Image (cartoon, rainbow over all chains, first blue to last red; front, side, top):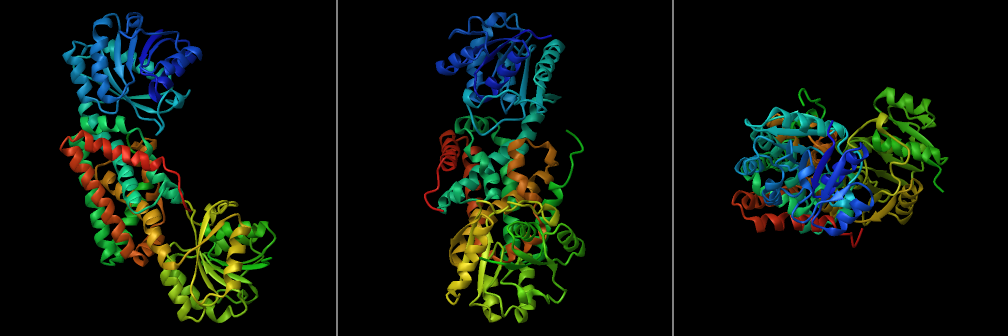
Length: 280
Length: 280
């Protein structure tokens, strides 16, 4: 059973993970660049001790979890590297997996690095948004590389199962392709709708429940999404091109008054919405 | 105080209105083309009596509410017209207001017709989706024409206030322009995302909470939305063109790796999401 975990970054993802692990009796070492969040995590007895600014103290952790924005994760991993020789597992929680895997390999951590992407979240961010149970029943994608040691992958599976998540093992490349559709495309679309509405003088409170549902993600953390978009740009480019194509074809049908094409557009969409997944 | 209302169409909107009115002691006459829904509304004591197929029985209603799909509303209004001479108010609940107003005028009902659009709903449809309290705190747009009698408008306001809604008076033309952005654009976008995902083999269960939120509306009733898109096509055309433009510009920024443009895209979207409405 896993007994000690270092969590670097105590925001929504890291903070929630630390809360769940602590609640299960795991000794959690924590770090956050915001001293206030770090202090709260200590005061609330979520973390047993705070790591120093140079990450000293991390040496005792069986698993190290980077829960910082995608771009910052590279620097943080580099900074950890000299101190994590004892760790069985080094992992992260970012939404893009190829580049961080490549950084881990360059740092000589490839055998113990298992990229992870818990497929849950919230448009809110920070320690104040962290919560017990965030990972309950959530899928978490685990992306070992060819050189990853079996005990590292096994510990990653154990870690996520311990907080109620359901691990799905895939490759970093496949993950990044797929997530461009399931997550990055919805985010970009929600933000684009926000821009279109703003340009037309529509504010969030002017929307009904449907419009709010479509634009809810627009409130997501901009810095986090900038990093994600930059690291998965080619796959996102393809996905946006497809949604543009779909919108353009819907528009042509509506504009020309082609009722049967418009009906097919809405009913095929409703048909999709009614489908149950065959695979996870 | 309003004492009798005929509700034609006992789906989500009409059924919910009938439930709320009945709960407040209003005598509700109901009709639905589906005999099963009509029977349930009688059995559950939501409607006091069922109108006949030729709408006989409607003569006693102080207010007549058409709660049928946008396109069907024209035929239903024509069918009602000879029998509603006693009614103070004839109204509807459709998402598009100009064309039905024009039909009412042609039928000589312009002085008593007040188009209404309660800005609430659900992607589910039918009597089984109808519920008490659907209109609580919802805005309802009321669109009188120049020839509408003040007592008709006053009764429309009273009717909607009685079920907890907040009436907002506007013109049919302004309503249709604005609703293309606040409601029709989000619907078309959600359906377009569903198409893009389907094409890439992604099913609803493959999505996380964010993707589900963006695509939830794709499950909306296709027939209803076909009617709406056909009746408000010009305004929807303009709105889709704008979202295409926003997506294209986001894609250009992501594709070219322009981090500051990508950051501006996400942070302006988040800024919009954080804004409170200045006006209703």
